[in-house]
Image (cartoon, rainbow, N blue to C red; front, top):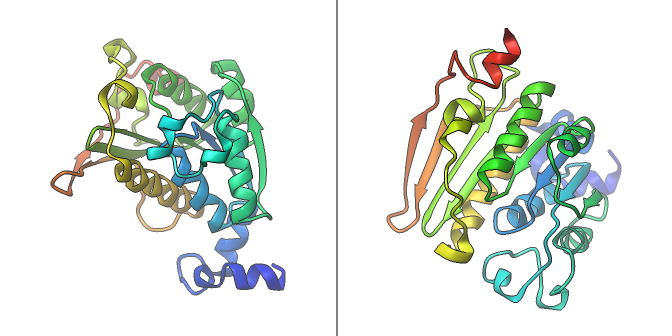
Length: 251
């Protein structure tokens, strides 16, 4: 690392779980963030500031005034811009050494697979059940981890799916594709602004821990927050031996 990097990341270098070796690993890491809204805003900002070397930002939406109540990486001046490009502008101010690539399109499973091949991990910041199933399919196929979260009203949840570990459940184990869950979104249901900041920050933390294999990440555990009472609950997630995605891969 250069002298400027030693100073920028000094507080990380003091941590036994990171240190110089861990920080160099972060600098060499590539992360794909899918969705630059309420969850993606804090996740992208913290991953950039923490020293992730390359971020791939994927979002086909534009910044709107109603986003600014919670999507803190965007500004009033950038209303009308692509969210991915707006986030890139913000990251350039936070950490100009972070290489940022933007994908301004709605990606399908095939495109996701192409993008995933060039990164180490996906951070799911979407609000769409079908998109999460698509992320899961490509992550299982390529043995890549992904951090997944959701937030609506005053309720949030976050977990890590990492089928590089043979006993780990995938997203389809926890939320079977056949369930066809309805898609609730903040446009129709509302969302507490700080909630997405909390959950998105946890996503960033779990991403860094997974990349460094530091501590115990949320693999196999779904952590849920009720922001009205500020109480956390944790559910154990089990692998489904009949899962149509991860079990089918292993047959």
